[in-house]
Length: 154
Length: 154
DNA sequence: ATTTACTGGACCGATTCGGTCCCCTATCTT
DNA sequence: AAGATAGGGGACCGAATCGGTCCAGTAAAT
Image (cartoon, chains in turn cyan, purple, green, yellow):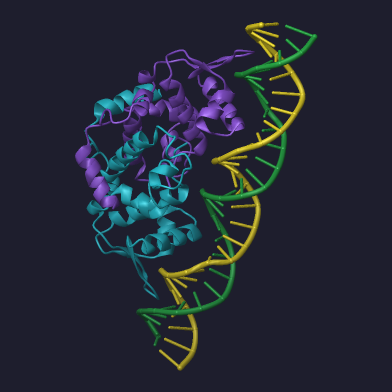
């Protein structure tokens, strides 16, 4: 279905939650679970992952919690997927050589590489800040293509 | 990892194989398995799927096989994913309403819809014909974005 | 009638996914 | 110093999906 995992979704929702607060605000896992209505263990797990990816800063102990480490306008969705899903590689072979035993035979590798980077570009053009403030930037100048796609998908 | 399934990959390779032949060429499952070096049962399965999606025409009996039903220049990658993976919906909620129990609460749905259609647009801009003939069209006019993405991903 | 080849679906092992739980360590408060 | 709070790092588990196989049925050509 070409979908990102739920966990990744959760992670992004959590980051968006931080991006809505004043910069540097600290929130703990319990608070996050409450305001996002997600189960606490899941929230905890994802916050750990995000901290490991250096997107959040963690503060232990009482009064501890997490805070956003970077400017939301500077974090791209591509980066988030990179951190949460371990990269964007539509097929094995786009992740690098040696993944496919037909690298010579296959004729569609190179075009897929281009497609992959196109998708990556689309994702790299949206920032966390834009995710939080709706109705903003038109993402990418391919509206005509976009509407064509909508038609075809219809 | 945001990847398409291997089966989908196989399906596309098979279609590409047809696109390389003169229009209307009929090939059977065994021939396809040989020339693509994929296991016969898999090839058979995917060809069935592709026929079901009306991308291939099937011909039973002796001298039977499959042939491409449409002009390769007219079939987009987005359509292929649609047929083989059942759609392109980065998250459940982009597939339609009722998939997520926090539709009101959530603030990032609408931006994700835009991202989703952007990705879809990227995929709708590449045709099967372009997949077969390498080094052609630059896909989409977002090279600057693409290189930016490459940098960031790096 | 026989052979060829697609059709439809069941089936299976392996992996991944979504989610939970527990014990450890660090920090703050009193 | 002691206790409470909160993150860190895992293991762990059931369920769903994935990748792949197999087989009985049907249609067409010879």
